[in-house]
Image 1 (cartoon, rainbow, N blue to C red):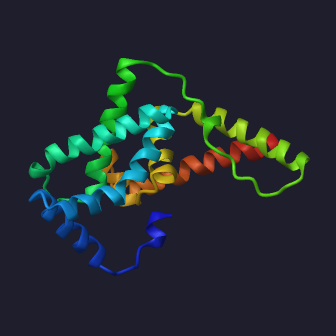
Image 2: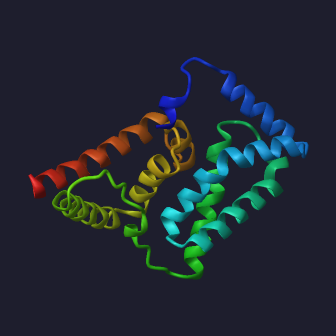
Length: 190
């Protein structure tokens, strides 16, 4: 997970990002490229998980970065840049849904083949379908919480900033949600 890959107690990553953002605000092409390369895949994955359409997710990703570029001079490094960027991405997704109401098929997300026998693959597929249905039945906020953590791979601090919660509240909300889903799955399949 995002937090686990960061070096504990190393302010260099935050300081480096802050310096990169400041340089990008001055339209430094190297800094702009760094920020784009760091966040383009997580933003795309997040948007694709909501939209379910490759072309639309690519378009919204581009729109997100264009909006961020336009707003960058007004950005104040009060928190995490990722949180600010993902707020823009969320708004782009909401605008997209206001314009049209697509059917998002969670089955489009690829399952990892682990070389299991066919019977195990069928069982795994049934469990995946059951989980997909349970996720689809969650509130928009709960689905967004899962996407921000597991698809966009954001830290709890970043998720909290996006959702207007503390880091601990975001962590607690996610753990409760995952636990609830796990208990439901175990009760039905156990």
